[in-house]
Length: 476
Image (cartoon, rainbow, N blue to C red):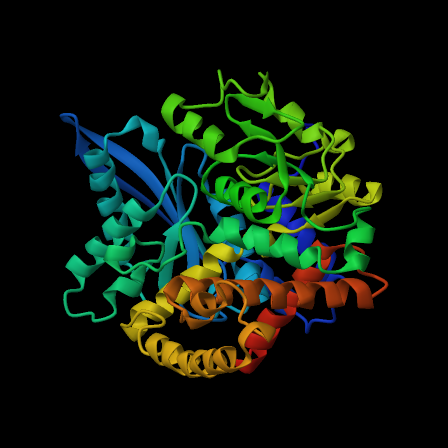
C-alpha cells in the first residue's frame, strides 16, 4: 500500500515539469500555456452486444498544438480516466519535442478490459469509438493521429483506419489517420518492436559514455549486465529479447501480473514469453525461481531495472529498497515524483520515459510520412545502391584475382556489402539516429549545468525549450 502523500500520475508529471521550468527563463504566462492541457473530449457511446445495449466511456485529450497533427496512443484498460489521459498527453508533447518528431501531444483511452470480449465484439466497440472521435476531427491525418498503447495493437489500428476511410472516401491520405497498422494495411516494417528497440538503442548510447556509466557506478559494456524487466508485454519482451540476444545481457528477473521469475544465470526470454502466451501468466514456469509477489523483484540486486508496464510501480513504499544503479523507464511514468527524489539522492541514474520509450512515436512518424508519400522506404534507391556497390565488389574481385594468395576479401564481405537497405534497415537506422541525437541533447544539459543533476530534468529542459520556441515562431 502506497503512502497517502504519494502524488498521482498527473501530479508527478506536473511536479517534474515544475522542477524543470524553475531553471528556465520563460516569458510570463508561457509556462502555464505549455503546462496545461488544451482540451479533453469525453465520449459515452452505446454498442449492442449479447442482446443488450452496453455503454462505454472513452477519452481523447489534446495537450499541445504547437505543432500539428497531434500524436498519441489509445489504450484499453479498466483504469483509464481523464487525469491519466491528460498526463500521458503531456508526456507525448515533451517526448515528441525531445526526439524532434513534428507533432503536438495527445492521448486516448477507453475504459474496457479487452480480455472480456470476443474479437468481433471488440471490433464493433473500436469502430464505434473511432466514429465518435473521427466525426469531431479527433482522428484525422492532418490534425490528430492515434497509435497503439496498452491493450491495443495492430488489429485495433487497422479497424480504426478502415473506419476513418469509410467516413472519408475521397481522402487520399486516409491511411495516415493512425499509425501502428499491420504491414498489409499501410503499416511500416519495424513498428511492432519499435519501442523495445528504442530502449535497446537508448541503453547502447548511455553505455558509450564513460562519464555517464560512472555516474551510475557501472563500467564496461552491456555484455553480461544483469537486467530485471517488469512487464513482458510488447515493449518489455522486445527490449529484453534484443538486449539478451544482441548485446549479451542477462535477463535475471521477469515480473508479470501473477508473480515473478528469477534466475541468476539468466532467463530464456523467448521461452518465458511462449509460456505466458500459452498459460496466461508466469505461474508454473519450470526453469526459474517463482515469487508470488513479483514486485519484490523490483528490489532485487541487478545492474539495470526496466519497468515496462504500468505507471507508479516504483513509489514511496518501495523506492528506498530498490538496489538497481540504473533504471530505464520503458513504461510511461513508472517512477513517481516522490520515488524519483529518493532514488536520485541514493545516486541512482534514471533514463526518463519521455526519452526511453520514444521509439514507438519515432517509428510512427516514419509510418505517417510513408503513408503521406504513398511509397515504401527504399523502393526507389535500393537496387541503385546495390548496383553502385557491385562496381566496388567487381574491382576488389579483380584485385583478388591479380594478388592471388597475398590478399583476399574477408568471408561474407561481398554479401554484406552488396545488400542495399530496405525499409526495415532504414527504419532501424532512423530510429538509432533519433535515439542517439536525443540522448546527446539531454546529456549535454546534464553535464554542462551545475543546477541540473539528473537526465529527467535535462530532458524536460530540452523539450520545453523546443515547445517554447515553436510557440514563439507562431507569434505567441
